[in-house]
Image (tube, rainbow, N blue to C red; front, side, top):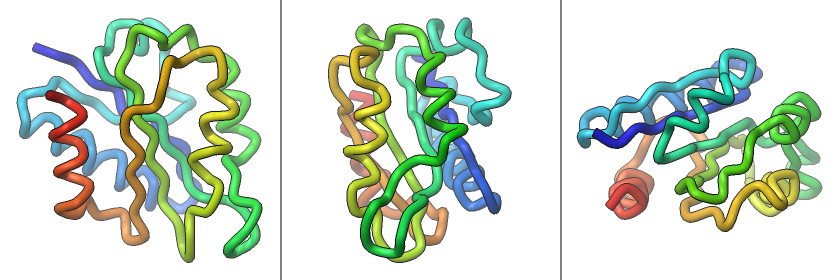
Amino acid sequence: MKKALVIYNSKTGKTKSFAENISNFLNENNIDAKAVSIIESKNDDVLNADYIFLGCWTSGLFLILQHPEKVWIEFANTLPDLKNKKVGLFTTYKLATGSMFRNMKKHLNGKIDDVLIEIKSRNNKLDTRNSEKILEFIK
């Protein structure tokens, strides 16, 4: 069975809930998945997963200058090489994600080949559109 690790950084619990929803959806679709915070994440678990989802909440000035917070950036710097993994990004937001995904990728530079999925949620729910993206990602 394929394995997935959904790693998140959450401030208010919305991103944690979204990560758990992603993990539950993956489990319902025959992927052995678990959601863990960046603090709980272990490089051995990352290396043993086929799919890696990396997520955080959107920080920034309403509609501009979105970026991951410093603790997520520091975590990204400690990740092992993910070039042989299918990597996806996710975020929660209040108004807009703006440059969030671009800035997350920037901090993963050199560790990934490409991000194959980007999903976002304003209400921490996994809607039909995101579910379809995930199903395509895990094919």
